[in-house]
Image (cartoon, rainbow over all chains, first blue to last red; front, top):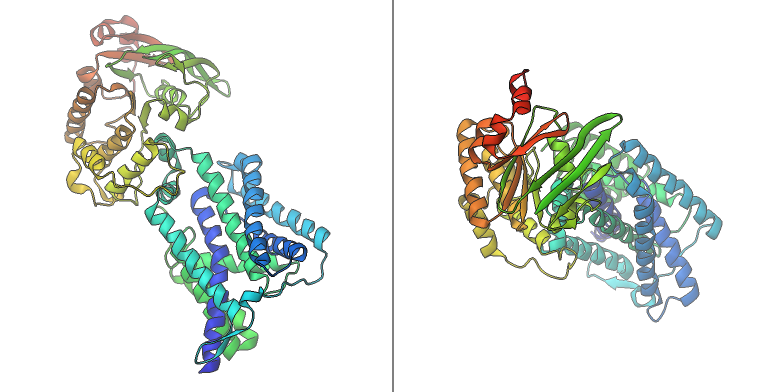
Length: 292
Length: 245
């Protein structure tokens, strides 16, 4: 029972941090119709920026939280520059150009990271306020991982609130349906794109910074996470926020169940789920069929 | 009020709009007609900023619109609808109008401002286009004619001075066409909106317009009252001298 609880929480915290990244990927696709290969790279950059910040200002006295906020901020600005100066030129052209462009960003930034931080594995310690374990009655569990669960849930509710209850959310939902009409109503659609791309990147950066104490920073972590994010959105439905949520939770649980029962085959379970979804519901659990 | 001067647009050697000039006066119901491919839609897209003219300019209230982005043109008081259905298909009729109102007050980026209940305004707009009973229906499930009515509500939400309608009755049944003509003319009169529209249904144009511009091969060959246009010899040649469809 204790072991099952821990496995469940492991799956949950992993799934919810995956959600932070997959949500941004999905929203960006929904609005801009650009499949952002570089989203995992934004996540990785977030982790490295947090590492750099922490190595200067330290972990205590809120240093870790400043580092996390800084990661989000740097990624937001970087993404805004990328969108305004480059990506914007590619809307309305063949999708291949956008894919190639975001793939070029992956190569570019992974080399930049290699150059700045080298190829050795780096890590951040847990922030002092969240180190140690919490007694949950059934089991002791690392406080930091519980915190990650909380962040994922708060972000999910926050994004849902924005979508349902604010002007912003209405406009973003409308932009996923028809950008031309939105412009005809007097909305500055290019600005909506800029903000969505930038916010999605900031979310990935924060996700990377928050994941850094729980994982190790190393080259290749960008491709690992982007592949998982693609699986999340394929399962959940591309462009759907709740789809990304359910997809991320499912993958988190599946991986931890796999680790428990068939340790060498855990990743295979994830692929099997993806194949099953593709076979029976190719548009994803909560996605929209083409033309709907 | 809306002044179009010497607009020209060429697409890789093909002149779609050729030195077109026309004036739309306040309160006019101004129809633009012409055979298929005469450049009606291109002309509209040049006015609304969706296309950039090679030469010429568009002025509204004596202020230059040429060179502005589409959303900026809308904010100067020029509402439009497209030839295709232009509503948000997966939102309710109510939410559709709500978006249009958010767009209108130009505070879409004040995300801290809640979606205030503009219930009265929404209800009034829906009443204007006679969709008050369908408020909670998902827009994509409405009949074609009703989607067109909703589209009109969206364009009116911005309280435009000039409304551009591109073939407002295209694809409608005779019954829907008749209803929508009545609706459009009533709204235009009630709200004092100036209307510029394209149409291929001649009966409709001559029935409601007080001013008609005829385009042929992208050039304006007449821009006058319906009677004068009917008598115009070059118009007769275009429409009667050779088949138009």
